[in-house]
Amino acid sequence: MQKKIFSAMQPTGIIHLGNYFGAMNNWLSLQKEYAGIFSIVDLHALTIPQKPEELRTNIRNLAKLYLAAGLDPQKNIIFRQSQVHEHAELAWILTCITPISELERMTQYKDKAKQHKENINAGLFTYPCLMAADILLYDTNIVPVGEDQKQHVELARTIANKFNNLYGETFVVPEAMINKETARLRGLDNPEKKMSKSAPSEYNFISLMNKPDLIRKKIQKAVTDSGTEIKFSPERPAISNLLMIYHLVSGNSIKEIEGEFENKGYGDFKKELAERIIEFLTPLQERFEAIDDNELDQVLENGKQRAETLAKKKLKEVKDKIGL
Ligand code: TYM
Image 1 (cartoon, helix red, strand yellow):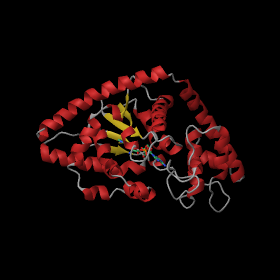
Image 2 (cartoon, rainbow, N blue to C red; image 1 turned 90 degrees about the vertical axis):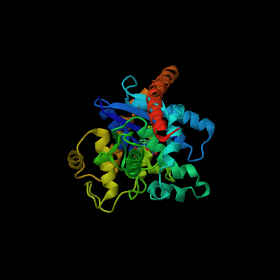
Image 3 (tube, helix red, strand yellow; image 1 turned 30 degrees about the horizontal axis):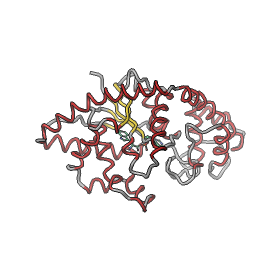
Image 4 (tube, rainbow, N blue to C red; image 1 turned 120 degrees about the vertical axis):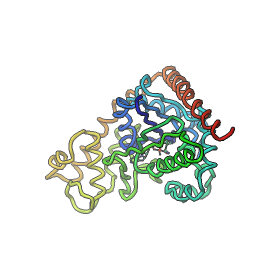
């Protein structure tokens, strides 16, 4: 049987180059080899306050983006998490075997709790149990994600092993797949931290939907290191991050890019980088705009049905084992 990959993104309105190269781009290459299941995790999005109309739009836009990026809806299952009730139900069951101490270790929880001091809801804390349910419902072998999700996938492994030990072999124990090169793109305004949609300033990231003028502005304002050379080096995280982005959007090797800008300064480099990003994003944005609403509805309905069939079977097995 073909091995399975499962991955997902939150419909929070902004999908940036970090999300794209850290995760989505890997989904695109893996879809050839694996049976892919890709979710729009709208229940996870509720851990941060959402305006209903915006959330509705963001869910659809993220689904459109999956298609515009090149996920094949015939081959893969593309669906909304909230439309397959088994996710929430399994999440509860898994929550009941997850030690609080494991959840307290999660760095993303600690960071978000700091950021949203006024709204530290219980969902933010139990979030990894829902993520474990997403993964374990489908007998997932591989979970392609960026570096920041590694700890959550490890917890899903811990939970799967614990359940299997308590009730007998039930869950496949999944593995995270992380592309070393793109595991953690950094913020344009702060290369010490990851590129993040919840960063205080939008100058932290390039959204896949940003238009040319804004991209030019953002790249121009991007922080640089001391020194003037366009060279990749661990001691120079800002220019290295920009070089990595240049490499990813253009397909040119880092060496080639360094050669091209050997006797030039940051100004020239940044100008060219912005144009390369625009060239990369324009066709994706055009495909996004061309997706028909009815076609999208069909994809999501079809995905829901296919996901539901698998999820129902797994949840029944789980409920039988635990005595429900
Ligand atoms: P989310 O929506 O925050 O991010 C989606 C994906 O983008 C990756 N990513 C990055 N990669 C490289 N550099 C960055 N700066 C960067 N920022 C984000 C993330 O690692 C992720 O792969 N909890 C998940 C969604 C989720 C999920 C799942 C993922 C829910 N259930 C099951 C996999 C399997 C999240 O919030 O991702």
